[in-house]
Image (tube, rainbow, N blue to C red; front, side, top):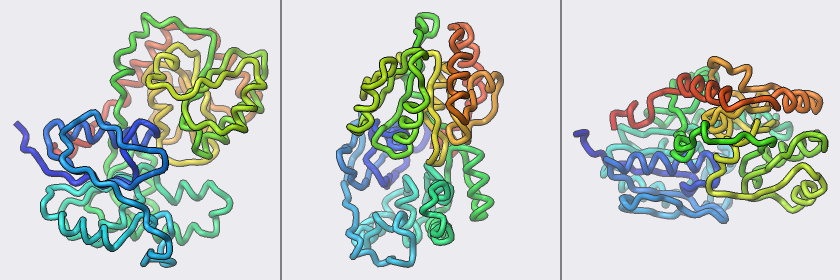
Length: 364
């Protein structure tokens, strides 16, 4: 039987199912607590709460974002990395650190703490590479040297770094000369329960995401402008849709906003394709991983597919688009997809996506 470890899990956000990154945190905590002791520190986030199925978390502490005027690093480091930093919380974590075998820093927003804590096992999870994330916004171009300097400073306090793709691993090496390890996302058990033999593919497509995020709103806006009424039904799943986009959706006879549902995977499995063009953001897109895990092809662009390694049938599963005409052509191309094809795509992706989990790599 493996030795139980004590882990202090320090997260920039409450672990829950609302966003892909927070859902990974939730699943990782539940995985870790099966044979380890985990205490959770997290920063609050508006309208978000902790969602954990396990009852084995011994300590949960909610923290609050530091008022900007109290920030001791202003203006030395870029605010993204300092917003959650507090000398008071640093002192609290330092006082507790020796009680734990591992300090786990979840999201780049909390990496700064690791610079000032003396501990042999300070592990950081890079959900995104921040310099790449901001490089895609024109208004931040002038700040990129500041962002890179700040990210390098924050990363340098960690003893081990994890990320989700070889693409992000390469960026960390190229920009900061930092080595990192790759872990896969968890595949939701609800996905694994779906039998494609029993699923009837419907004449519809789907969009899926947290629509309070600006990059997802840009995606919706683009699709609404380029999805003509002669195409099949498009169902949009996920919470947080702004009123102005809801009003726009209501003007389209073949587009329906369903809203948040606890299990979107049956609808994705029934769909002929997931439509997900993206114009900002960084990191591997979990919606793409989940769709491919169901054998459902994706219509997207470079940002949609970045970080997903090539696999057999990837060209049939990942349809690249740039224009509205490309979108129409891709939808028409997928209209004849069958259950058999989906099962072939699903098996090919599962084979390529098999990697060591976080627990396996650390021997937990």
